[in-house]
Length: 196
Image 1 (tube, rainbow, N blue to C red):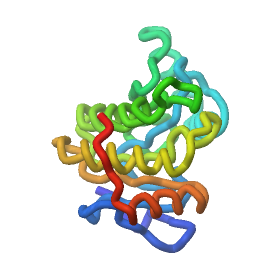
Image 2 (cartoon, rainbow, N blue to C red):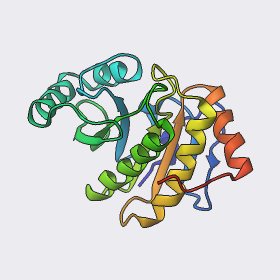
Image 3 (cartoon, one colour):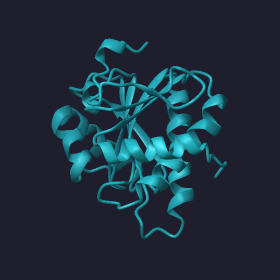
Image 4 (cartoon, rainbow, N blue to C red):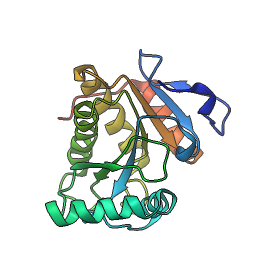
């Protein structure tokens, strides 16, 4: 269960993005969010990478990096939209879910990103996790439009979350106000359409 005292939104507010009060949208440091697992935007080799992925490996310590290397050696490059789980190292989660996201050059980034969110839910459910913290995927170095990412995230999660047996709380975590505003714009319009 989420300890709400550990949610430290920078805006001082917690926003519910679905009919379920357990689904939250916050602007916060994702490393301060209590959840069973946290999603890490990953490179297809699962190597340390840059940006948010680099910070995740740095905070988690060498155990996470070693787990990713072992996974890469056993499975090889991971395809875009795939999600793999490792132990969380020094992070206060049961698992880190490594999601390989599309970039703006991909043939169909919207569909691939929707599949990524669907795969996050599938793997979290297989692991019998109840809560997952998800940053804004593919908005950094991969360069996807924030409104597009917000629409895909809300659409895919709203469509597929009811099909899970264990996952009952999704926390969409923004590290800056422009992403929060993108989620709020899309959420207020309720323009969710099944993509997958």
